[in-house]
Length: 356
Image (cartoon, rainbow, N blue to C red; front, top):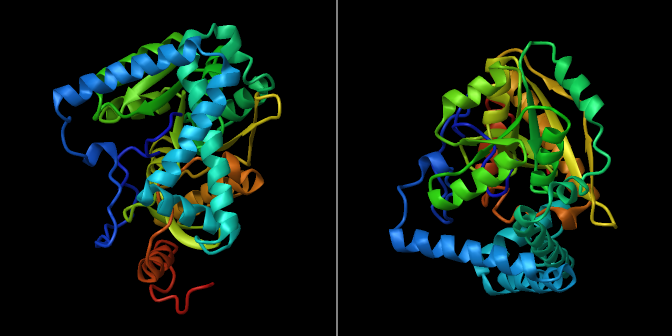
C-alpha cells in the first residue's frame, strides 16, 4: 500500500477492452508499460535528493517541517498548470461543482497542504523507532481483520483495496505488527536505487515489497493465503473496468477483481482517516467475494470498490491526495464507458441516454 502506483497487476487485465486514447490529453501509463530507465545522472540526482530530504526532515522539528512542506505542496499546485487542472477536475467531481468554482480551488489547496504533512511523516518514518510508527495506528482491530481474512469463502488470501488517503505505510506496518503476512506492490521501473532503499525500510517493518513485473510472486502471495495491498485510485486509464464514481463514469484498475477471481481471494476496501491528534483510524466496508472471472462479476466487484472509495473520499475530501485525473476528459469517452459496462453486465450494448 504505497503512493503513486496503480492498483493492478497488469492494469489491462480482467476483460476490459482497449479503447482509442484521447489525444487531447496525456495518457497515464502503468509501470509495466513505461519505457526503460532514465539517464543514470537523473537517477543519481534523485537518490541524492531523496536521502538529503529524508535527513533534513528527520532533524527538523515536526512543528516547522509540516507547515513548510504543506506550503510548498500548495505552491506546486499553483505553479503546475497541468496538475492544477487535473486536481480541480477531481475535486469538482467530488463536490458536484464546476472545476473553476472557488470552492473547488479552496478544497484543492487544503488537500495539497494535507499532502505536504503526509510527506513529512512518510520521509521521517525510516528515522523513527518502530514504537512511534505503530503509535500512528493505535486502534486497528487486528482480531477482526484476521477473522475476515480466515473466513474468506474461496480459500484465497485477502486483498486490501485502498486509496490515496491517510498513511498506507503506517497501516501496513501495523498489520505486520499484528502477526499478519502483508505484501505491497512498488514501482521499480523508474528509480531502482530508491526502490531498493524503500524496500529495505519496509522489510524492516515486516512489510514485504513486490516489484511490478514479478507477477509470479503476486499470485504466489495470494495462493499462500496471505495479504496484498493494492491502490485503486492511481488515475483514469481507458483499459480499466468501467464504474460510476461520484455519479460519473470512469474506470478503476482491473487487477484487484481479476486477482481475487483467479486466486479465490477476498477483497476488503479499507478506509484510513487522519484524526485530530494526527493518528489514523482504520475501518472497512463489507468484504467483496467474487469466485468467478465472469465479466459481470468483475464489473460488480469493481463497482463495489468504487462505491467504497467514494464513501471514503466524501467523508473527508481534503484528505484525498490523488492528483492525477480520475475521470475521462470527454463526454464521448464517458458514454463509451457506460456502453462497456452494459456489455460486461450482459445487457444492451447501446444503453441509450447517459444518466446525468
